[in-house]
Image (cartoon, rainbow, N blue to C red):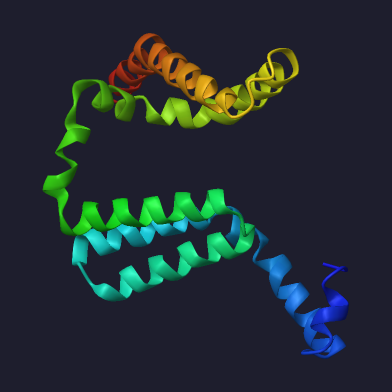
Length: 169
C-alpha cells in the first residue's frame, strides 16, 4: 500500500517494490482461495500422512493470519489447525461429528455454501441496523443459514438430484 511504501523503501528499491506489487496483484486470486488450497493439502495429508503437507498447511495458515493480522483470524486459524491434526492423526476423537443432525448439515452444506454470503450480508446489515445485536448477529445468521439450507436441501436439492440421476440413465 502507499502508506507502507516509505517504510519499505528503507529495505527495498523502487523497482523491487514495483515487482513485489505486481506479484501481489497476481496472487490476489490466491489470497481469496487460501482456504480451498488448505483443503486440497489437507486431503493429501489425510491420504498420505506425509509431513511435508502438514508443513505446507502450517505455512498457508500462517499466511492467512499475516494477511489479516487480527486476533479473530488467529483464533480461527489455530482452531482449524487443531481440528486438522485431530482429523488426520486421531480421527476417533471426532466421532461426535457423526451425530445425525450434523450429518444432515453435512449433506446440505453445498446449499448452505451457495446461500451463506447472500443471506449473511442482508441479515447482518438488517440486524445491525434494526436491533444492534453486535456480535450476536452472526450467530443468528448462522442459525438461519443452517435452517434455510436444510429446507432447501430437503425440498429442492434432493429432488433435483433424483431428477438428474433419472435423466442421466
